[in-house]
Length: 248
Image 1 (spheres, rainbow, N blue to C red):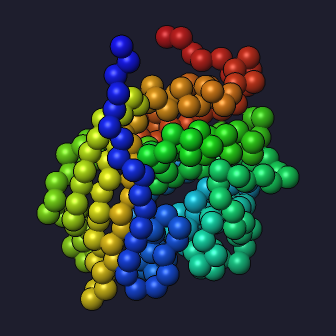
Image 2 (cartoon, rainbow, N blue to C red):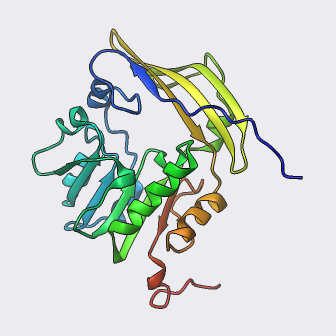
């Protein structure tokens, strides 16, 4: 008999100074957050002149680093308030990632910030399908998953982040599901005298689960780019005959 799993309702909301995007992310918080080197390990894959489609670009914390490297960036976000803070040289597209259809293919499609861990399986599949629609035949899809250890172990009262911008766990609820553990978390962010809260729903995903998502949309098995296999790189399957996987 198949096991049944009690699923938490997927929920996103936010509060604090300034507007919030549909997923609860606070625009002013993102605008004031500093770049912390999140994509430095990707630099060898992003030489000057690379066309990059950044999915969920927000206010451009990563986008502006890509511009410094000489990349040609198209930034996608469903929040006009987020996009308003991007550099004028970025081609801004206000749209939901799931329904994105552009008349262009890109050298690199970037899905950062653990967005692949969205708690809704249909949304996860739609994110990967959007990448498949927009990556060039010889391009790459680069994505980052959330660290499962942190998602499973964080407790109310835990504080992370920098001393001048602490992040506190206010609530955490977990529920097992077939692909992983769904986590609903409430975080409080503080910068100076201002505070924001963000309630979000994510799911833990191991590399095998992400590999299955990628396979279903015509991508190769992912290659880990860091020791913890949080950043992953994949290519369209059609390239396998030209770049076969090395067998040691």
